[in-house]
Structure formats: C-alpha cells, structure tokens
Amino acid sequence: MRYSSSRTWRMITSRLASRHSAHGGHALIYLDNVQLRGYCARVDVCVRRLPRDCMTLVALVHRTHTVLAQHLPVTPFPARPSCFLGHPPGKPHRVKEHVVKKFVFTAVACVTAVSSAMIAVPASAVEIPTLGGPTVLASGLFLPLSLGVGAGGKVYVSQNALGALTRISPDGTTSVIARANPGDELGAVSVRNGTVYYSTNTQDHTASALYSLPLDGVAAPIADLYAYESAANPDQVNSYGFVDLPQSCLDQFDPAAPTAPVSYVGIVDTHPYASLPLEDAVYVADAGANAILKVGYDGTVSTAAVLPAGDPIMVTPQIAAGAGFPACTACFGYRFEPVPTDVEQSGDGWLYVTTLPGGPEDASLGARGAVYRFNPADGEVQFVQGGFVGATGLAVSKRTGLIAVTELFGGPKGTGQVSVFHPTLTDRTLQIPVTSPSAIELVGNSAYVTTNSFVAGATGAPQAIGKVVKLSVSLGGD
Image (cartoon, rainbow, N blue to C red; front, side, top):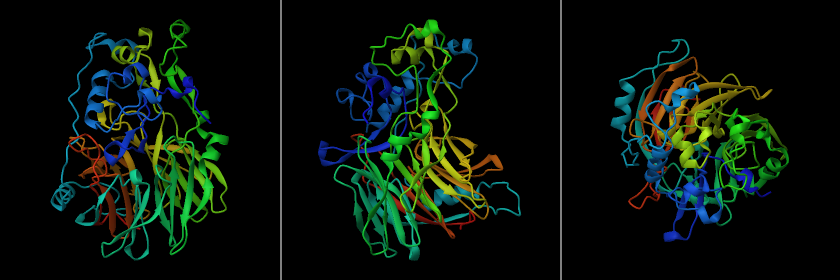
C-alpha cells in the first residue's frame, strides 16, 4: 500500500533506517526525520518518506541537528501565551551546534563513572552496580543496531546497513551467517535455545519479515510482518498532529500545499527493530507500526501492545514559519508518534520497551525518549521513565529489576551513554559514558554492548567502526 501525499507528511518522526546507495560505494544511513517539502529543499536533511526530489543525504548528522535546532526550538507544552516570551516571531532561537565527535570508550571512563555513583534501591533487591573490562569482541562493524548472545559465548550482531547477520565466536573470529536481499536491511537480532531470530525489511518499508535460523540450519521465514501491518494497522487508534486547532485556523491551511497533515491517525508502515523470543512467541518491536507484535512460532501474528502518542510539543512561531504552517498554529500542541526500538522481559513477566520520541534523535528538541512497560496478558501500557536521548536498546535484570538503556546521542556532549536505573526509583539514574551505544544484552555477569554504532566521519557519513564490547557487570544479570 502506497501512502497518499496527504498522509505521507508527518512533521517529524524518528526511526533509524538504513539505505544502500551507490554514493562512494558505501551504504549510507538515513534518519527518518520527515520534514516539509519547502523546508527540506533548503537544508541537508535526510528523510525517508519525502518525495524523491526532496530526498537529500542526511548522514551530515551534525548539520541536520544544527539546522533543526535553529529552526525548530521546542519547549515543554505550556499555557499558550507564554510561547511568544523571549523569542518574537521571525527571530529563531539559536541553539548551540551539536557536532558528532568521536570519543574512545575505555574501561577507565566506565569504572570511574560507576565507582563514583550508586543507585539507592532496596538493599534486599539490588546491589551497587560495578563494572569491569571492557573486552572488544569485534570491530569494524557497520551500523550494529541489534545483537543477541547464544550458548558458549557466541554473539550474533546485525550490520543493518549491510543487510548482514554476523556471528562472533569466543575466539574473536567473525562470519556472516545470513543476508537480506540486496539493498534490504537486516536487524532485530535475538537468540533462544540455539535458534537465532532476525528481521528484514525493504528500504521503502513495503515488505518486512521475521526469520528463524536454527543452529547449523537454514534460515526460514516465520511471518510476513508487513502483511499484518497492512491488514491491522495497530496504531490507527492513535491520533497524531495538531491538538485542538480552532476552525478559523484550520481554514487557513491550503489543502494543496506540501505541508505536514493537520492531524492524522496511525498509517501503514513497518520497520522491525528488535525481537524477543519467549516460550509462547517472538515479540517484535516494530518502529514503523508503533507497536509490539506477537509472532507465534506457527507464524500467527497479533498485536501485543500499541505505544501511546507522546505528549504534545508546543509549536513556536519559529516552527510555524519554518514549516510553512499558518501563523495561527503558533502556541498550539503537535503530537508526535512513539517509535519502539527494543523489548525485554522483567522478572514479573511484564515487557519493557524503549521508544524514540518522534523527532530528531539528539537533544535539540529535548530529551524525549522513554521506557514503557506493558502486560502481555492484556496489553496494558504504563509509562516508566523519560528523559532519554536516542533510546535504542535496553536490558532488564529479572533478579533485581535494574534497567540499562543505551542512549545513542545521550550524555552532556551528545556522544552517547548507558543509563542505569530502577523503576521504583526513577529519580536516581547512573549514567555511564559510552560512545554511540545502540544495543545491550545482559547475560549472567556480563553485559554485551554495541558501541561506535553511529559515528560520523569527516564527510558526515557514518563509519564502519562499530564494536561489540563485553564487560563484567554486577547489575543482577540473568
């Protein structure tokens, strides 16, 4: 199903996607930040859902974020009159340039950070986290956005940009054991009982599937995820876009203008991002569907949970002007889409989910990433913790309840961090500097983390310098 132009336009959504390109012979990464057509023509913003004539390379992450920060100043949703204070219409509020820099992830930095902080949680439940290592298991990876750990210390990691599933043996040797079709993305890697699970999707997001790969076996599709999304469209129950615009303002929109829709419900889209195989099914965090899907081992697909739309973000006069909205939209709220990126099970059986906020992944619009949890028995969704920047992965200790979240653009310099907290004490968070972490798994007394996952080089394109790192940890591993 193709998108109509009126439904295609979403002011900003945030899903990481990869796209192969002939440019320089490398696979180039696109951020799914959908801008308005007129605005996009003036800046180097890379988008997935824009018309082809407006699709410009977005790998210039720092330039993208700088422009967005300059033209899209956003503050928490207040009473309407205050949005004009301090920033008169027509004068953009300048935000300090965010430049992606390369930082080295070392044991010293991690150990220092951990030893100088502690999480105050019930003594009977958890211990003070400590960290040791790291040991680099593999390097030179291109966009390693997901990983799983199997028996005997074998690690399976996706190189999303290459459409490859890579196995890392305990001795450090690597081998590609599965590939997507040429030009397609491979991700959502997980492992259970010797079987590896992963997903593939096309770059136009009109096809996606979940696969299983038994030990020393042959990969086979389990379910057609896009077919389910096309038929069910789980997040059509959510409303996105402007909130409570008066009719007098609605009348000022030009139906023929290439602007974001005034409001819309969830559209058909698919981008499986993470998977979690449990006894009854494989749960898939679909960043396109804005939902967690439950895939039975017989191939039956159903909706486990739909993530709620985020709180409205106030549209300032600068946003309205830059986006081509009528001036009357200033000081009204715009509700963005939630974007699930990982799913893990806790000791009480609930499933925890990280989400991107529907906007730039860095902090230019605020630290709006979040962790939710839901009851797989009835789909009840509860908010757990917010304030993350680029939350793309999490690990949950079933024994202690501690949660670790990878923040791709977290930390004071926006270069990445892992945040550790307990859901009963969300005001106490341990933050560990890690360069561009995207995925994390907790196994026994070890944490496996993908680092340097999205670090721009001199040309602005992401580099094939991703790593899988193993650390000894006392987060209450399972």
